[in-house]
Image 1: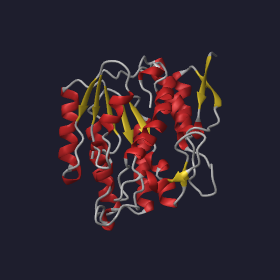
Image 2: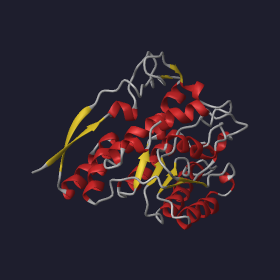
Image 3: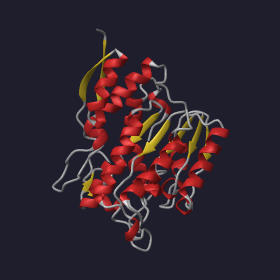
Length: 289
């Protein structure tokens, strides 16, 4: 049976140890692994159920290719979500994307620092606008955060999350969606301790997000939860090739919650290669951080 050989940079996507502390990771010194995938859609779907998170990216990329959905268009780029996307830490996601996208494009920046006040209403309104403005791709890196960060039981948090996911189901174009990071590092004056999900809640919430995303070819999941581990553990990160690792906390605003401009660029630099694998027919020069 014909097979496609994909290069999956698993350490590039999810980080590996590059120093003495747990959570050290380098996006620049990864090892690429050859993965041979079947060409049959049913076989790929079976593999998808049990594959590692990084391998799922390659499998969904192959499935998208079979369905003619393997090309990202950056013609009209919508950004929806909360304060991370809106640039509270100093750099809007829309602005960072604008500098990285080659060729003519339209930025549709709909993210709001006030998203947390009414996630259901704001999430619905932002997506309505993205759809109405015919967005070709939607970046929603932090849109799920405030559905989970509420003072509530696990059942109530799960119900809230389901509302956020149902809202996103209305979009048919590619969605670049972040899962839910552990932000216990947030200062109490910015993130009240009572709204922070316990680790066991967060694990179950993210398991549901991953299950939901796995079933949808238009959704590419960004593992913010995995990427935030170095911050929680006090680890270090290699931000630039050939340079010493830096404390993960140096990529975060003084509030301990939002990435600063350096952190936003680091996050998007890690996202870039995963998009190339997830949407393998996209011109690699179309987006470069």
